[in-house]
Amino acid sequence: MSNLNIGLVGLGWVAGAHIETFKAVNGANVTAICSRREHDESALKEQYGVPLKAYTDYEAMLADPDIHIVDICTPHPFHAAQAIAAARAGKHLIIEKPICLTYEDAKAVRDAIRESGVNVCVCFECRYSAHFKMIRSVIDEKLLGELHYAEVDYYHGIGPWYGQYEWNVKKDFGGSSLLTAGCHALDSMLFFMDGKVEEVTSYHTQSQGNDFKDYEYKTTSVTILKFEGGNKIAKVTSCVDCLQPYYFHIHLVGSEGSLLDNRFYSAKLEGLVKDKWSTLETSLIDSGDVSDHPYEPQFQAFVDAIGRDEPMPLTDFDTAFESHRVVFAADLSAAEGRPVKLSELA
Image (cartoon, rainbow, N blue to C red; front, side, top):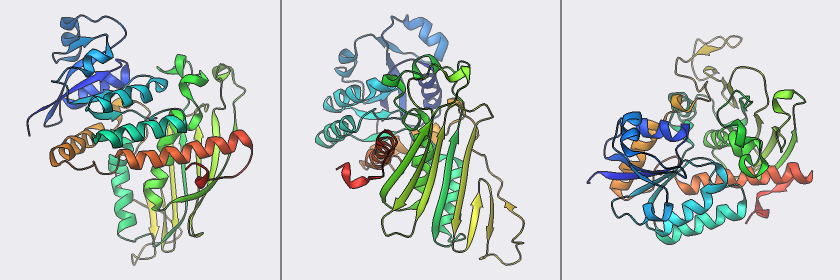
């Protein structure tokens, strides 16, 4: 397979993390960027350390036959239209979360991708972290038995001190607490629980603190999820208006044991003491800084999947679409004050 060239649209801090990551990925390079602002190509090379062709016209970048992958790093409301245009142009896609802000747009993106047959990576990169690989190993080895309950919670105060705050506070940009950030937690819970969600009930609220008064949507939500089959339930909190260190809370409960972040107890292992946690040493997901996120293994898996002409593992579009469908159901439940069955989002 020859090297794949990547055209990146949007040039904020997430884009910088993507450019830096691809320097370590075999088989692909970022070779172009598209931004609303004019950029001097020599200045870009000096800043990012790689030669980058600069576009201000997205359609012109899509028309470039030397671009094989489009990497969408723009603010949330632009994702859907840009993804649809790239798919129709026959470009493989990397889409930063969320894929869009409405369920109708999600279906439109899905249809464009299916019609074009392009490969897609959605940036639920936590699935590629050492922490989550460890948890999946514990689950797959049946050390927890059969899971029946999970709590996966996202606490990350996105206030005036944070890079995306200025646009994130707007309803038509951030969308909701789950869409703008907490979808990482919900997607992770689905990754651990192995099942289809039947129904959700969600509630939302908002901090009265001055740091979060400019938000145009509720900044904390709690979602209770019931799975098909009736033997699994879960809870997901998305809190972007907290004043505390970043915390990605994971608590899984099964028939043979429990896991709490990087600690566990398992009745399957002889000699463990049930009233004390045993620690599994790993690198925790404990930062909202994109430079700390496990993009490298995710992007490498994507490039390798394109080479094999196969959907990428773990964070392909269809998997991410289902996670978003649950997010949209949760937001609908909170907005209308009622339980929402996933069958309502057909």
